[in-house]
Length: 139
Image (cartoon, rainbow, N blue to C red; front, side, top):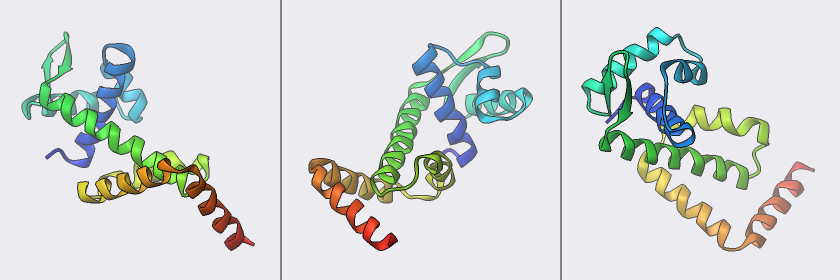
């Protein structure tokens, strides 16, 4: 299994490839707010661990293994954002909160959160009832 740092890189590479068709060291460095040399080191490690194929000065692509993990990591991130939005976390806090918790939850916990999100999505009145309870508690 990849480390939390590796997960951040795989997730970012996956997102860049999905949105732009490619991922460059400079794009990853900017998105993760790290130095390009750090990205190069991690890309080499991800290549060694078979998450991507890297050719010096030519670029890289995710392997099937890297693509599968990337897709799963993006799903986890999106699910946690949706969950926090449903439970009423303020929009400006959601991204940072997800970044803070996503690596600390087991996949079993992620699956249960998915069940809860689906429960709320099945009937919008459930979300409204939750919001009403929150408003009442905030008084």
